[in-house]
Length: 179
Image (cartoon, rainbow, N blue to C red; front, side):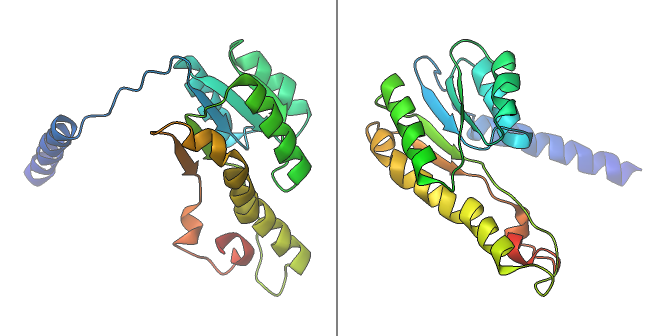
């Protein structure tokens, strides 16, 4: 028991030392635009809501058309929610046009859209594997290439690629997803 308490105390001390020497930077959200793909559910959905609460101008791309209305209801008037399929260049081009009408500078691009198909390699069709790669890899590359001019217009802009731990810890039933 004493060992456990000692361990907790040491963790507490290291945590506060880390916070002291490496503080979280405060980012002024005023006038900053963040584009997030894959805001239907999960991390992208939650991130869009949180960044909107923090005062960022959120540009949220959703795949399922019905999710546009439901997400709009949860966000402020600063936010823009639109339909986006990152595997279709015409959707990416339309998103670029929409974003470019609102701002000439992006603070961040969050490539969050992703899908998974579970199954061993001999169970999954090549079409399913291509779809996973189209969304999880080529879609992110296409988004980054298209929005790069709006990102490099500002010195401290960033691209955030959301990925899965499955890329590091592959399971036999996640053959396409782990690639």
